[in-house]
Amino acid sequence: MTGSTCVRTAVPSDEQLLLTYRETADADAFAQLVGRYERELYAYLLNLLGDAQLAEDAFQSTFLQLHLKCDQFQADRSLRPWLYRMAKNQAIDLVRRTRRHRLLSLDERGSRGDAVRSPMGAVLEGRCPDL
Image 1 (tube, rainbow, N blue to C red):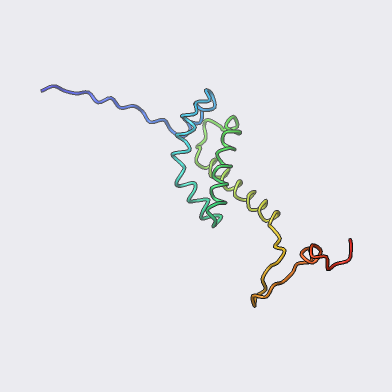
Image 2: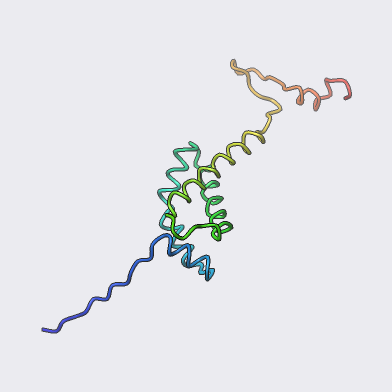
């Protein structure tokens, strides 16, 4: 009977992957991190924001921030809480930006379905005096 040897390769921790990325700019290490957190972090952001597009935007912003701030990561800390705090901050910032830049409808519908013109809609129609 011939014996086969099974070689186990150690799976790097999240922290090791980030440190490798920080030191060598190894895109594969970063891609592994994204893959490890893709489902759970997106689900967290979706639950937090309640909108799939906002969750996707926050997810991408989070990993952009991870890339930009990887030199601030403390090697003796756990990556998960830092990443989730970063994701929460990105979600908060995104909600603030979205709230600030909401689109104003020029011809909204009232509660009874009738057209309600905003003051800007009236200006565009020429019903208001020149400003």
